Length: 304
Image 1 (cartoon, rainbow, N blue to C red):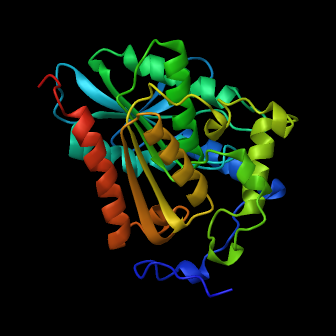
Image 2 (tube, rainbow, N blue to C red):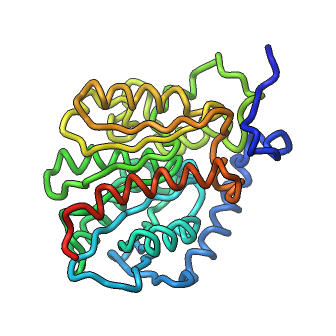
């Protein structure tokens, strides 16, 4: 096998771990995340959706009569992480686009397997749409990694229930397909941060005792058959990401179903590269592409 090549802006890639969480470290990381979730974000607030769920909310300094909004789901393989991980992104979205950004503190597997995290996200979407000063006709949904997979599932669930119609699904290297856990043809040397071992832990925790034949399509959006009628999608991934192939396949199926899509593929980028290398030009370009996609739908034909 040839030596894997990483993007020239990602100089530290060869020093990074391929795996980041295991069964033992998962509980510790969950506890550390719970601590950070208790603190209010700088420039934002923590608000309660219901007795089980909170959201971290960032509002622009210049308010509109009705503001567009973004609901965000955080990364972490469905087993670790917290909405606080999106604080920097929330401030950037709010300040640069002049919209409200809310990151949902969904409950984590394995204590809360499917469908709890998805239902938490849906509850937060309903809460956001009903808030005073929010334009329910201009709400986007998005997330990174596991959060991107939840956002894709949320778009499907919103279509099924017909109560709220998001204007965009923004999916950053989303975790979409549990069947990737059975692949044996992936070169682990090109992977960073999220490995097949991590992926199996995440999916087994989320799906519980379900067999492959019993996996609900809403749990793994790549299994969902009818993708027609979904909101437009912006989808991004790197060529050195474990999820690259499932992301490309899902974007292709969306297009075939008549869904408008924008695909951003970053050569030599690994999973979560834009978080690890925030200041790298390739990461700034990647975030700007997401901001542009959000701006195009949230700030178009809205009340000023």
